Length: 91
Image 1 (cartoon, rainbow, N blue to C red):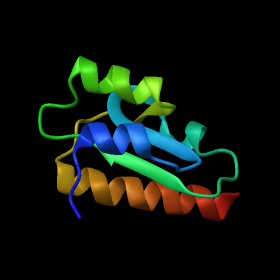
Image 2 (image 1 turned 60 degrees about the horizontal axis):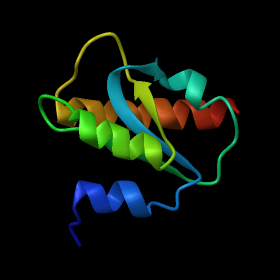
Image 3 (image 1 turned 45 degrees about the horizontal axis):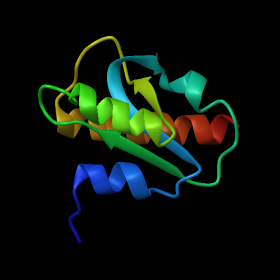
Image 4 (image 1 turned 90 degrees about the vertical axis):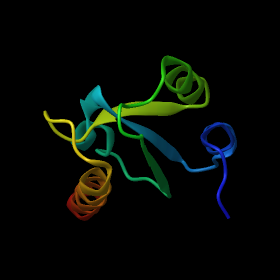
């Protein structure tokens, strides 16, 4: 069922938690080690608020960038899944 972003950020049990942000680290560098499970949170149009980023960081999320451009949400979701899949196969 749907949940609030705050609830998702504060209750996730994923071993690697990523917040997709344009000024984050390249995704390939974050996904360079084996992981059990992964959560990638892609923000709304206009990006995350400073408060949302702070809450995410306080709960172990790393900021990650998909590419040099800002992508539409539907494109960002596909790009994140493809990059995560490629990194997993490269491990």
